Length: 309
Image (cartoon, rainbow, N blue to C red):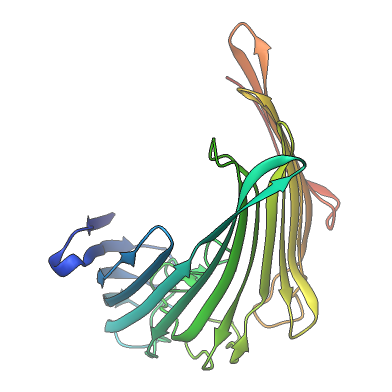
């Protein structure tokens, strides 16, 4: 069983905002470690913002207690971990009038900085019940932990910098195009890792870039690129397109690449895949859906799906 509690109070004492995440969960497995985990994560932030800028300092205390029935690992059966987490999120939004293919649009320029400080706590004796390394992308670059789950809270002294620019129709608010770049700057070496994961040195992270927009009416495209400046290699690359001429009519196509890390400790095999999917009306209220996912690297079908609605 798993019990979770999420609470938010946007208007708290003195203009602050309060948030809370709590969980109690029991893990069971026939051959691996089992146990119980309770976590409490209260957070207090002070959002300062206008239509042109925002500045939000936040402090939290991540508390966890483990009662472990060990089967394969060694260590104490009861572990308590308390971690203060401090961050500052700041950004500015500039805007100007411009034209694109003869159409009057508004262009934005939005720099954003995110500083994160998390002290080091030894966590090697905590089993990895449900924790893994998250992908590094624009959805996770501003998160306060590089891991999913709570069995590992990564130590951090880092600054994330990103720049976004958009082309927007000032009348309708429709977004025509969006470009983003971002990177992290590490001021200290990483100490907390998963089993088999190599510790990250200081310096900089991979470089992220993304571009998406409307190519023509009903046709959209997006590109995402992750580049490793240390090795001079592309880490991930994805390109996709979508044609959506009407309601419930959509066709998608995409290509995805990830670099091969089989020669690195804890590494994974690379990915080269194409993916086609879509939905289309068949008449009399019926719709057909389908997907075809094929691995170029392995020369085999990963997944096919067909359905009626």
